[in-house]
Image (cartoon, rainbow, N blue to C red; front, side, top):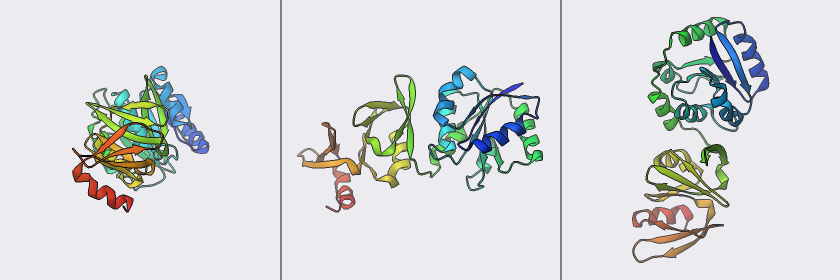
Length: 247
């Protein structure tokens, strides 16, 4: 029997999916969540075999959630559930990762369960991680690590990202968090939300800029609001920064 966790921000959709899955003796539902972060915090205890994840959730997109989960639990199976067919769903099929369009047809769920039962534990999630990295979603919040805990940070609270070797530091007004993603990943995701790569090691929130200080060795130091750290601006980025600031 496969243990399943269901994640969808709409409780009516969760109730319907629960009702459908309860008809299958091969599936045991061990968790039902409308809060993605709560679900993420309980996965280690629940140890599910498969997750049914809604894609279009307001707090965090289901693709981003799946990418975070796969990094933590490499053998977990993912089934996406969506009311829209605009999410490059064919890419998921290539990886034996299924998707269900709402409303879910009985025949389609039968196919999904059959597919899940045929999967072995040697899953290859490379392509789904590629999809979640390249998917052009507008982030409202991002996942970050805080001493082993996972938190969701509102985009507007972030001052800057800093690359430190293989780790990314995420600085807010009051606290530092970490991430295993790359600076390129955040640059691609947040470039249309007023974040700017001012240096190979820094991605800053343009809305937080308070002062530019001319420098001899490179173009500028940036001082951000509620932050004492001087952040360098590379010479090759200075002109573009001026354009963005209309300076």
